[in-house]
Length: 68
Image 1 (tube, rainbow, N blue to C red):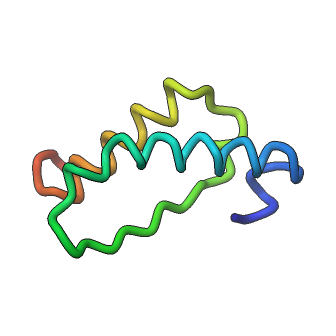
Image 2 (image 1 turned 45 degrees about the horizontal axis):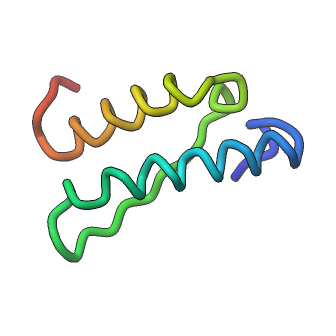
């Protein structure tokens, strides 16, 4: 995770939040899928709900269910 996300504490918070969010959504992915979740600089300022919305939107695009 890039230092652009924030300091060490912020980066670890974002990492833990994303890990938790992905854990709940992993069943929606096809078996054998490999997905890389990259936190952009704005992720450090986002709350849990915003990260969830952004992750859901990205997975929706990935799985072919939304506009790009």
